[in-house]
Amino acid sequence: MDSQMNYGSDYKYIPVTSVGSGMGMEVLPDIFHYTIQIVNIFLVGKPDTNDFVLVDAGMPGSAEKIISVTEERFGANSRPKAIILTHGHFDHVGAIIELVEHWKVPVYAHENEIPYLIGQKSYPEPDPTVEGGMVAKMSPFFPNEAINLGKNVMPLPTDGSIPSMPEFKWIHTPGHSPGHVSFFRESDRVLIAGDAFITVKQENLFKVLTQDKEISGPPRYLTTDWKAAKESVHKLASLKPTIALTGHGSALSGELLTESLDKLDKNFDKIAKPDYGKYIN
Image 1 (cartoon, rainbow, N blue to C red):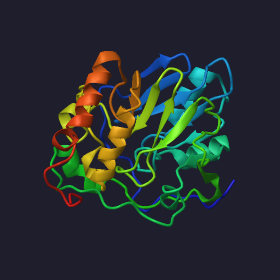
Image 2 (cartoon, helix red, strand yellow):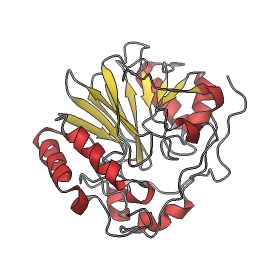
Image 3 (cartoon, one colour):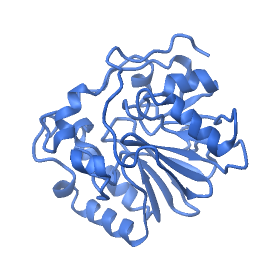
């Protein structure tokens, strides 16, 4: 493995958490949802096999917890076939270098996200002026510098397939980041949406801490392309998912998901897009 991996100089532990932190749930026999502070990771694969992947890599400093959760579900010394990223923001790659070093597994992300993962580009700075709540005001403390995974990260296949997730297809859902992707399984209409939309109002500190269910657009303080974000929500709503797993908040299913996602799609500018902020056209 590449020994030159490193985080940006602004990488640090973020002291914020929620009531859901440390809680895991088997959403389906082959999908396990676990919350680390304020963000979710997913283990995709049946626990009686070694054929599974990790989707996203948690908050800074969470590697030991992710390894522990993985071994509790799949057995001692188990490791995923790969780490699949929805995108590369700090709260989705917070433990990735330690995990790659420990497991010796490849990482996959959309080709448009690769520059942020090999040290070439930093993400735009979070916007503390955006309409929202306390978390937006805290966002200047969030890391945004490029990390460098070297040769350990590779682009997802161009045909929409996902390595070691054979029934899923990836869907390009930019807006929150240029290479943001979501994952969809046609057979049971399960959607892993990442931060294309989420099920908690991420700018509101109280709702982040209490994890109140509320379908929302992508986190405002890190979203830079609202036109693309709107198109991405429409793309995902048109899939008519039966279960949605998001980067922040609880899983949603059934009528609540259908009605909430349809409402977000039809009223995106009112519900999701902030009235002001430096990334608002």
